[in-house]
Length: 331
Image 1 (cartoon, helix red, strand yellow):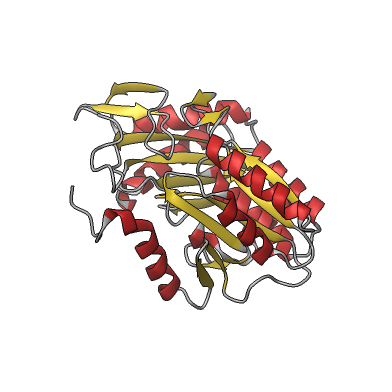
Image 2 (cartoon, rainbow, N blue to C red):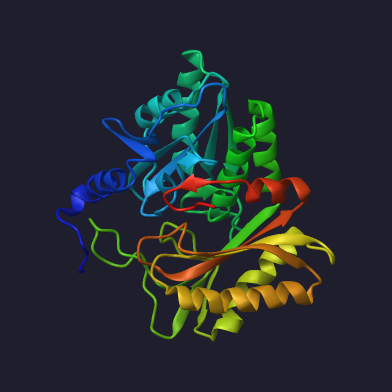
């Protein structure tokens, strides 16, 4: 296994230190306990947004700290939930007096540890609400979760909720718009090759050269089914069709189409997937009014991609379009 690392045990700490140096205008790193917060700290009078989870999904979540998105992000070890003693001070650091919304992906460790931290924060006088992201249509249950997993749709939740907070919505309002995104976003992914966790040193699962894994999560866990490798159009249809069907998209609706790389797939290939996914939606009479393509919610160097569709209305579209200035997303 060849990686640009020093001691694999220090991989997360070394990466976060470099990230904080590269983006010192946007973020500040708390080294102990570990979390990332806006460089200027909490914004007085604004609802704070906190998310987090295992490392290895970069730029999620630390790359989305900044104006228009998160106020703090809490990274755990690779593919491992952060602990309550990390999450609690991140919530406190994000509190500008208007309360804090925690955005939690539906993985058992994340759910339990965020719940504990939220209870502790409330006991200390912080008003906190939470939402649970579960956009993955591939499985109902997996090794990591009860119910659907939270995957690339998390980005849409963080972006739209962050814009709502920036425009002055109260905690209940920010939580409500986040729940609307969760109700209207779906994702599904495919792996061409598995990732290698630095301290493990071997693939998370085995795939033959002529196989792909359809319906994978973002922790290297296996998917819905293993099938023979196929061309990009066929694979894209395997991803887009269950997503669109689960949303029950109707002719005349408009959507955000987000094609996400898992870390090891060239951008040129992601655009091939995007082109086919867009044509499939247009054949259903659905208008793609907003697009995003790139590596945003990754699984280390996993080769593969996911397709996310968010049903839009005027308000969600305006919140998506609202200014954002983070290390990984800005307009």
